[in-house]
Image (cartoon, rainbow, N blue to C red; front, side, top):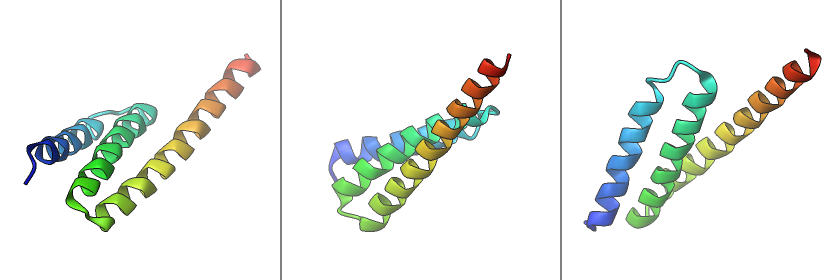
Length: 80
């Protein structure tokens, strides 16, 4: 296997593990988004559709929730 693909796979795993150490949901989602991005690239190297599809779906979910968190924080700030 290509050494670049190996590194991407390990980066995906490492950022995923790092994400689950975060207590703040926004930070968790940001790090898991990064992990999912690495999984997408890793899946492309391996020509693995399930990895790419799962990574894209996770990215969409995390971006949606990060935007929702940002909107809620902005609304709370404006209410003060």
